Length: 110
Image (tube, rainbow, N blue to C red):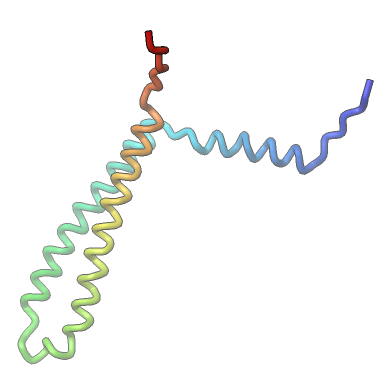
């Protein structure tokens, strides 16, 4: 009978694979909680954008020149965050759909 030597690196690799597999499994409750938090954040951001619009329109003529670039920069950042949140929401939805969709085996053509 031949001796089989298991190295520490092999053990680490197997453990890492097991842990990675456990991390890939996400409960529906966790998905739903995350999606809910994203929607809450989107609603808050929408309110912030409304308030930002009010600020932008209320800047007096005398302050428009020194504040124009900063206000524009803030607006660009807020709209960028809104876009990123939408992408995140869609990405999580698609990942959830992929994880929980049933794999239908393809029947051979008759």
